Length: 132
Image (tube, one colour):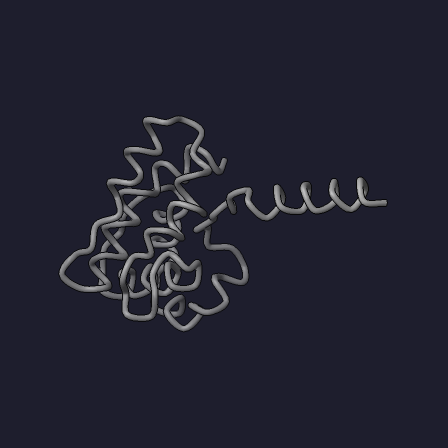
């Protein structure tokens, strides 16, 4: 019985340590906590975001800020959460060089919305590469 319990604990710990796949795709319904911003984003902007583009507007920046907060990559003050980003995003990148490059995306900018947008621009190619 102790052996079975030991194996269960081991496999459960592996399950919880594995990185979360992070999707920024705007599906229906969109990010539950960020629905309010979605009303002001055009379909063209959504299409650009889903294709890995970088449409820029104050609404897009606020929407990305909301998403990063929802995912835990930023706290309520808009500060990038390095440990969370490394454990949920960077660790899921298969290539060591990609992991190192992705860590360089963790840069705090002048304000929270700018940080969210620039982090998205930097990290999204890695998400597209490994989440598809």
